Image 1 (tube, rainbow, N blue to C red):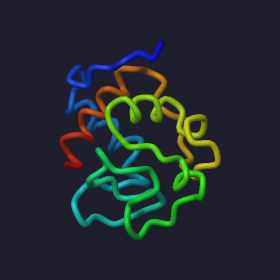
Image 2: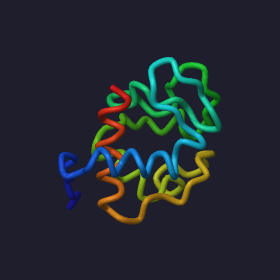
Image 3: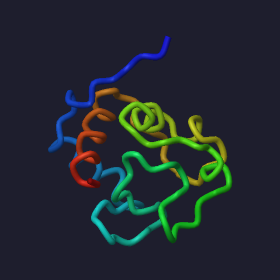
Image 4: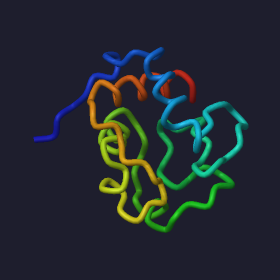
Length: 112
């Protein structure tokens, strides 16, 4: 049975700190922001995996067919390489559920 998450349980400020510490080396969130080692995440929610214009994704990411939303991000951020094998995202994931909820809350606000 798939478990559903409640994103409004995330703390935007804590998520911003986690993003800055663990994600911002490779990702930007602002509209028109540059791609780094990872793609710019603006407009992430509702977008399919492998679709940020101008970023060189792996074939695995392009073919995954995932639409990014609360639940898919929650599952993905636990272990990106397990969720999309052969992705080039070199990040072990957020093991703590609350950390994932916080980052997702931040991403919902910062990438809209």
